[in-house]
Structure formats: C-alpha cells, structure tokens
Length: 72
Image (tube, rainbow, N blue to C red; front, side):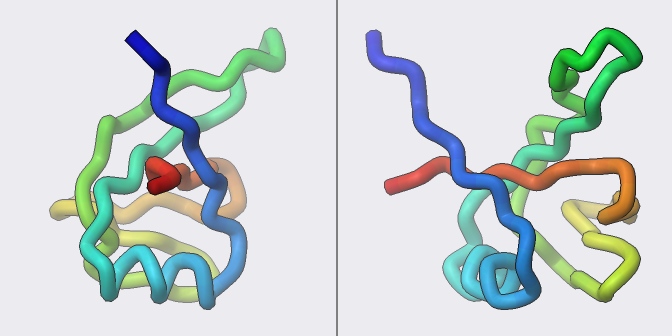
C-alpha cells in the first residue's frame, strides 16, 4: 500500500485553498530530537490568521506547528 504524499501549507494562499476545498489538514510539530510528531490528524481549516490556524475546535500556532494536506 502506498503512503500518501503530504504538502506543507505555509502561505495564506495555501491555507485559503485548503479551507475552500475542505481537505483534511494534519498538524505536526518538531520534537527536541528533530523528528516531526503528529499533534492532530486534523480536519478542514476553519479559520487562519497570521498567528494561528483553527482546525476543528482547536487553535494551533503557526510559529511552532506545521500544517500538511494530502496531495491529490
């Protein structure tokens, strides 16, 4: 079985496209050992600002989290 390929969402335009298309976005953070850890398997982007992204009912900091959507 092939593993899905994820695209990191960095810009406001990428987050807007993800919000409009309602794709599932997962949230990751980097551990002290430099390994990406999945914080939340996510859902669609509800709100985004320069500081935060809201997925489901939780706000995540853009400064410490990365957001990834499955590439189609």
